[in-house]
Length: 314
Length: 252
Ligand SMILES: [Fe+2]
Ligand SMILES: [Fe+2]
Image 1 (cartoon, rainbow over the protein chains, first blue to last red):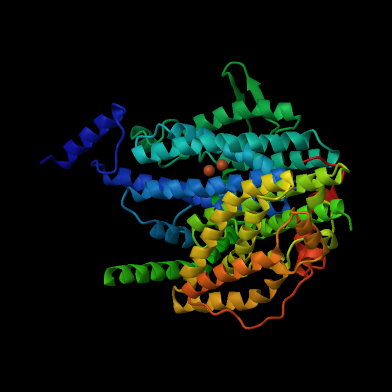
Image 2 (tube, rainbow over the protein chains, first blue to last red):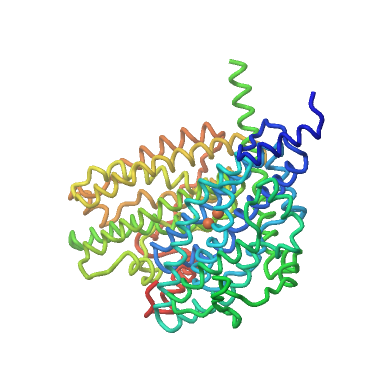
């Protein structure tokens, strides 16, 4: 039998050779734990993320936009499902993961703790939040854990639709009436910085980053992804005729990247730790849905058992 | 009332039923008892709103005044809506919503089954297309009525309560008025008496399997088809129509 050390060496060799790790393969306990944390956090984000956008479904200003938004939120629920399934391949139970979300032990993306105040927010979320998610998820399509990578491939296809649809809303509003344009600018002002925070703390402050890179769970650093996103998004904002709320934003010829102003990390940590504008209401909504749905889940199980008993008796 | 007027009314009834029940179901988005059923309910809401768009677009074409699906959805007041009262009632608990779906889906299924053979090509085409979706809606809500009715004591009580609450809103479905009679005469619309019999048989069969008892009350509420609604309707519209009403010049 191989010693732990030898197993770990073999494991790292596989990672270095770009061979995907599969559920039945040996893996270091810390790798498994990191993945469970990251995938479940990701799944929770998809599900909690349904709430801010769901907030505008009944007020969508045209039937076409209502259908698009409903379908989008449905996609996010589906992403939640794929991701919970991916997490379950690591030997955890969806029910337990949900419990951790509800008790506050597990986190979800801090972006969903911000409110959606106008219809333009639905555009801004699609454009910026799904946009930032894509940058991260395109990288994760090549993550070292097989089931996670495969879930991401499916998810990425849908996310790029979401981004286009969000941008379309922004475009309509930015080119619309003065009131619409103002809503669009206001939405950009409110969502810009929180979107940049989605990539996580700067590399020198990111506690999980180095190990995750070595295991190829991540393949680019937070700062690299953030820079990529900014470079791509500045031009899109210009096309909309909207102003990104950062006076320091400037093209740097030497770096061939945009320079940008300091991010308010104090706000980020406050929101992550429960002090964002909507943390309590988001969590309450999820807990309420779960608790009020308990009788439905119990009845479904009871009915299935009755059926099964009848079948065996017959 | 002439045939053209009746035809427009008829399409609005179909469109408004779909729009309003779709609206109610969309309220569940993100709040369902389990993720899989959240997805299922959003799916059904999407079907309903898609069908509403088809009916309201057809209504606009028949009217010939250039009104679009959005004009009908966003620029009419409550008394101009023609949906059945049962579609506009608040969702209640998940069982209430499922029971409402079941009672309405059964009606909607038999209605569309007849309408797919309508003499009016536009109506027949939309009905035929919608029928596949409605077939799934009915299967889904029937299965859940049985599951919850015959599940636990708690779920049984909730479902019986839902049925008792909703029963008085079922009679309106089969109450024929001038519009229905005219459409039937022209072989455009459905015979509501025929639907009523099929509805009764199927509903009885499913409720029996669900171990639920049909209420004895035979006094029914009505008025939705003629534009007399419940108190809830105004709030649905206040929410749904807010943006186009507040910014009438905007294009979204
Ligand atoms: Fe997603
Ligand atoms: Fe998305």
